[in-house]
Length: 438
Image (cartoon, rainbow, N blue to C red; front, side, top):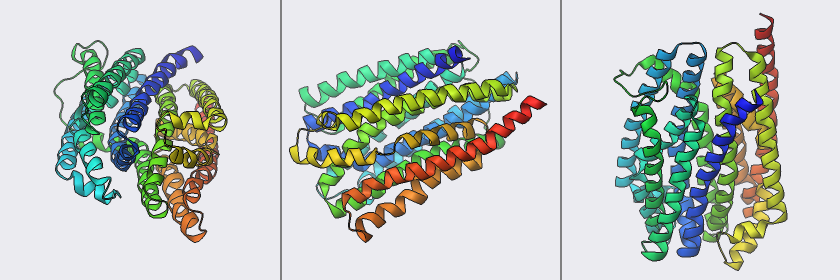
């Protein structure tokens, strides 16, 4: 079981780690090639890009859970039908999002908190990023479905190739051609196209169970996919809301340097977050499949291995942040004032990050076993119900400034993560025990 899990989770986590380099690379090239204002502008747009990612994850997690469950129950045709319907959904969503963001780029970033200085930069970045919405969403989703179709290594390869393309194009566009902030968006977009082109032949040439073909959209199936995937979307949307709220509070308390500081924290956060997400996405097909096949022992074993990997990786990254924060920050900026602000902020923000592992473990089980209400509740609890009020209370009511903004995160991790994990233990374990006794 451990070998099987690692066969899924390691390529998935590695793919997500490589994917996180896309974001980090953008930050490195923008910070060093254009300046700190570019970092701030991208951070203004980040809530929108996270919503894009959340929509793709929602559909792929919801569809993937149903596909794996049906494959486990030997209902392959039903799983294939779900895949085809999800593909149509993604195409429709992508085209709509691209049109809205390209046409209304300036009003959107203004609502998101862009200052007069950051407005043109943020609008330009959003416009070009949105043009590649279709390959971006399809690339994310198809990589997830490759794991459901027993091809985790192909998903890893496609992600790596897309990232290498992004690195090369970022360097050419920013340092050689001097195309400005839109360079990062265009380079990322072409990278997603490469990822998609590598994944597509698997489905077109029918190298696995999943394939393209004619399929009508069924309202019942769409509802079920969305219900299962909504917790994943809420998790991303909640993160988007937090960045939006933090940007607004920071720009009003410490100014644009606060947004640039927060941008660097987000670049580092994204790397950790995506690797953890990769491990959970690798675990999800195994948990859903074995649950559908009525094998509770294997479901438990997958959870234990997943938890060990998540806790181990987080411990390593937390130690690096505490011991060498300046080294991490200098990757993105050499501005001494920005570094001085970012070091204590980074340490404070990650003070209790290991508690978020508990949230990941609990949420993965809730989503994989179709416990939609639990998954949605805990997604909203940690990131919205707890963080949003504290983000306003600490800086304004207690006059803590930017420290108050960054303190809200560890507090929410402790409360939300603990509650999610305890609830999972009290609901999932008894259900697995009942399955064993039948």
